[in-house]
Amino acid sequence: MDDGRILGEPGRGAQIARWLAARATVGLCAVAAGVAERALELTASYARERAQFGRPIGSFQAVAQRLADAYIDVEAIRLTMWQAAWQLACADDDERPGDAEVAAAVATAKFWAADAGHRVAHTVVHVHGGLGIDTSYPLHRYFLAAKQAEFTLGGAARQLLRLGDLLGRAGG
Image (cartoon, rainbow, N blue to C red):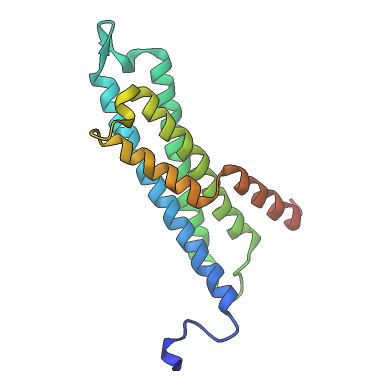
């Protein structure tokens, strides 16, 4: 293979793979944030329009609280994703490829995207009732996209283990 087709320098393949994986992970967290946000928008609109017992279901305390919790989750996904993206952008790739602080920021974003994405996906389906998984209604696609992101990211428990390992090695 000619030198023009080599990515990076020979012998640095693992470092380059980590560099790419971290950025791809943050990209997937951004997708998860967008999926959760749009699913919540659809659900909030539905809760304002769907009436039960003579009033919109969004006016019921339990529904309103679930929507509020989902809103906090969406904001947490977004915040941790941007924090990880900022950490990656500030890192000097040659000197800090395995920096524990950067790795912890990425793992934190993965945790929130997987854990909160899971909660938001289930909340929006529950608020919609049977309509939430009806394939003729668009919400089912957001549920599937959220679940795919959750499984691709590796689940929340896996990220907590990664964070614990990083914090243990870094001394706190």
